[in-house]
Length: 85
Image 1 (cartoon, one colour):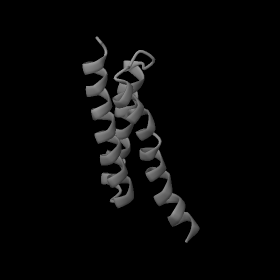
Image 2: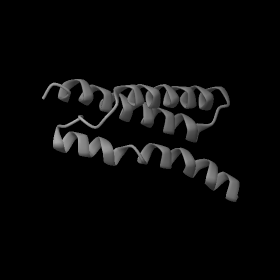
Image 3: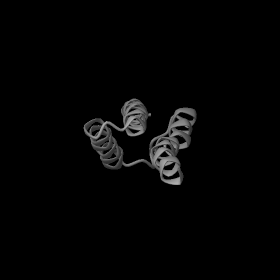
Image 4: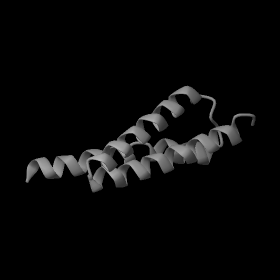
């Protein structure tokens, strides 16, 4: 039972950890302290986790992967919108 809880909690926490920074970026409209390379690396990692979840038929990883990819794509869009401001 404990391994199932940990296996479900880990991807959820991985998604949640990005949301405060995304919110701060949206509120301040500032991306001066963000590295676009790290954003793309996080996106790439999220896509790999999503694919891994898909290939092993793990619903929690698939949901977490979709959520992470969505958050990262929004973050990258905001980066490109706010970088010149």
